[in-house]
Image (cartoon, rainbow over all chains, first blue to last red; front, side, top):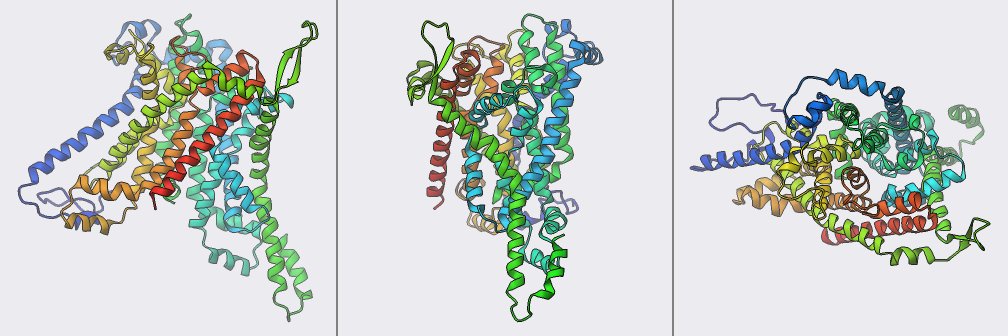
Length: 309
Length: 312
């Protein structure tokens, strides 16, 4: 974010990024205290990073252990490398149901995120830029929707779905997760900030239709916001547990989180489920971490635009 | 399509009244606005408003064995009887108490940690900011179930290093609350670090320079300038954390597979799940859901009220 654009020079003190360099005042005698405080700062950051990352390191090392090594070796110790064996077991167990779980998670989260982000962006843009009847009321209800906790909604949704005979279907999980009131709120903020009225007026004068203006002008301008909503909706669907737990009984419809949870309830009786649970967990975590690392620039800029407003 | 309509009708409108095309354009804008907003409005109606209404309706009924029990269960109108039941249920009281104790430890601990890290990252001398922020952010990408499993194993005596190192039993009567607090704090601290850090980037640099010229220390600047400026952001994060705390479900649900200390009604969400799917008491579960939604809305309103007062 603050990549040093200034070339490093052999100055006695380390150069700080340009915008703050002017504030650096010569403070005679304080160099050693600055060094110790810098050490303290990095010490705290190192602790925080270790706290965040070590459990994930444990996940990786444990996924490489066999059942026997898992209980006989200490946590971060590397035993015989058995990751491929664990993966083979994982995909073979219960007729390869784990493959279904991967597919379902990708379907729920991938399709849900793309479609949901589009719906949010369209609605947010409409609320911000187009006057239509019921616009204020819709925004008020949306804000209220942000405050209603998903767990309080899960049971009512289940009851309704069972009334409509939708329980234990793809749609029972997919449709509710499409609804993202916070995404609409974010999209409205993005539309306000990123789409100038003058541009819309100019397009109208050129004779472009309102729908085309949205698709070809406003949507591209809102891209960082769109990507942010998409990414965060992907994460929240991928991580969702309560709704599938309530709605689904057929293992072939489970997302990864629910499937792994169900296996874990068996692990106390059947220890050979332990490596499967751990290896499966690793597979459930890797795609998200990869997405966040690869898309860093997008979500960082998107988050800053959204959170600061 | 719409452009075709205008061009074909444009010659009809007399050039003397230039207000006609704008009016038609306004109509078009209204129609497009409604069309773009419609998918979300329908979803909101079907997946939020109607379920809540249906739950409220159901919360007014209860299932009773009719007659001698030969006819099975019958739905009976009880008015607010289910609400009274929930409000008088000791298990419900315990679940609220657990969540309250959880929130009272988790929220201050996480916010203090996140603010400290964000302020340190914002201090001028930190190198490798991107790497540090990414490292603390990673747990956010871990699903709650997986986070629960990882920590469950780490707490397990004989398997994980944490359970063996701690002076108390993380699965025990008094240890299970800190265990859950730690899981949630691990997951959400980095997310809030990013939120606070991005907000800190917007603090005007000339204000900070003026403070430094006046001889204010880095700590003083952080506490009396930076934190007050990002206070609105902190309050928004507080609203979301409060709602999140109230609906605590996944972490205790997963820990239940490791220890019997976590009861089936340990939090309000677990209470709802238990009432609906273990006891098959939909009326009571619906009433508890409505109460949980109301409590969330009230608490968020309270936090927002506080925030608007303090930012004045």
